[in-house]
Image 1 (cartoon, rainbow, N blue to C red):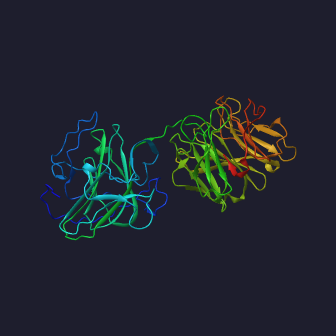
Image 2: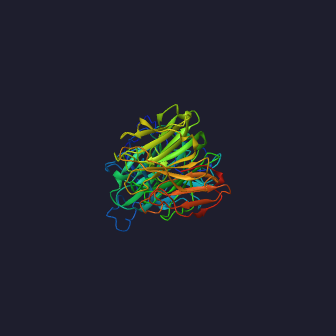
Image 3: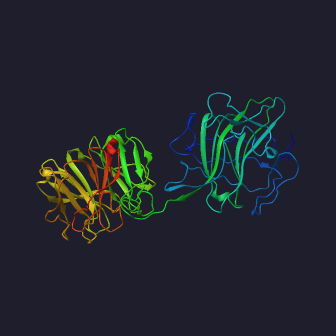
Length: 491
C-alpha cells in the first residue's frame, strides 16, 4: 500500500471520548457515559481518494492515483461531541444515509482498503449480524481505510453517529467527516459516538472515513465498526397550547400504564386521538400526573408528577413527549388527597395548581416564571365530598382557568368558574350520572372551540369524549376508544 504523507510517527494523543447512544443498537452491549468529553484532534492527515463529485456539489477531486492518499493541506476541524442523538429540544427530521454492512460487502470498495465485512470476532453485532473490521497486516506498517458513507445532504445541520470498538494505541484510529477529523478512543466494548458535523457541511455532502494507521510491524491493533448514520436534526415546532405534546397546535393525550410505561396519543383536533407510541418508562413511581401547561416559559407544555414519597416533580417538556431531567418543586405532598391543574387562573401568564388537603380545604398554588411553585392561599372548604376535582381550562370565555368536580354523594358534575378575585365562584350543577366513571381528566381544548373538554373512562375500559359547554357543562359523550383499563393515569 502506498501513501503520500511524510510524518511516519503518529503523535500519541490522550483520548477520553464519552459515548452517546444512537437509538438503533438493540442487541449488542453499547457503552454509554452520562456526558461526552470533547472530541480529540487527530495529529495526522486524512485519507483522500480521486472520488467523483456528487451532483450539485462544487467539491473537487482532491488527489490522483488508485490507492489511498494522505492530504495534509486540508484545514481540518474537530466536530464537537453531543450527548444524545440530537441536541436537546431537537429531533431527527431527515436521515440521509445509513450503513449497517448487512449486504456483506465493503461499502465504496474503490475508496476502501484493508477492511472486510462479516460477523464480529466475538459476541453479537450492535444491530443486525455483520460489522466492518480491519484486516491484519503481518509485516510493515498498515493504512486501513473504509468509506462507509458518501451521500448528498441538505445545507445546514448535519449529524453523524458511529458505533465501534477496537484495541489500538491512542492516535492510531481516526474518524473523518468531510474536512473534520478526530482520534477515536480505544474501547473494548461497543461504543456509539455522535458528532455535530454542521461546521464541516460546506459542500452539501457527507463523506465519512474510518482508518487505522500503525507503524509497528505485526501490530495487533484492530477496529470494528457498525451502524454509521448521517442525519439532520431540527427543533420541534412550538405552539404554546396546553396539552400539545407534538407542536402541531392540537391537544394530545398522555397515559401511564400499570407497568410504568408512558404513552403519548396525538390529538386529531376533534376529541379523538391517533394510535399511541411509547414515550418513556419508570412512571409507576408516580401516584399523580398532570399537565398545567407551560410553566418553564418556552411555550412547550410541561408535566408535573407526585411520587409515592410525596415529592412533587416538574418535567419540562422538550417536544414529542420528551422531557428535560426532572426537577423537584415541592415535598410533603402525600397529605394532599386531590390535585388539579386548571391552567392560568389569574391571567398573569403562569399556570396554577389546586390541592385538596385531608381536612377538605382547597388551596391554590402558583407556578413562578422560573418553573418553581409558591403557595398562594386557601380558596375553599368542604371539598372532601368531591370524588373528582378536575382543572378544565376556560369554561366561559374569560380566559381564566376554571374547575369542575364530581360529587361522591350524587354523582353529579358541578362547575366552579374562577372570579376576577381569583376565587372559585358558586357551584353550578351541570350534569349527573358520573359515578360510574373510573377516571376523569381534561387535557385542554381538544376540539379547538375555545372551551376546555373532558375525557372519561368507564368501568368497561371505554374512553369517552365530552365537549365543553359555556358555563361548565359538557355535551353528550362520544366513545373514542376502548381497552383503557390498563392505564394507571390519563392526562
